[in-house]
Length: 100
Image (cartoon, rainbow, N blue to C red; front, side):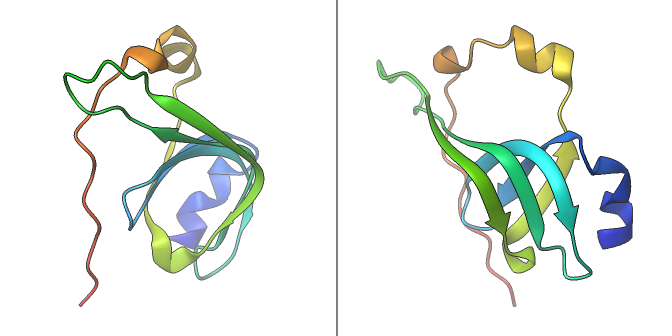
């Protein structure tokens, strides 16, 4: 996967982790084991369906994601991202991933 990530460097990416977290940030670099270095990292914590609470955002800034925790890494559609009202989005929490 690490060679496939090269075009994503200096682009905004979304990362799903094996523990169900959703992170967005600018991919600064990666290595052969898919360890990822992100800047301007924000974690989205989605409110559950039917909740009155808004979806929250936690700013992490410079952030390292270990490769064995990366489930998905994809480019963010900037136009779609800027038009979203993230505080109104609701989602069922993602479960964790089990490696066998």
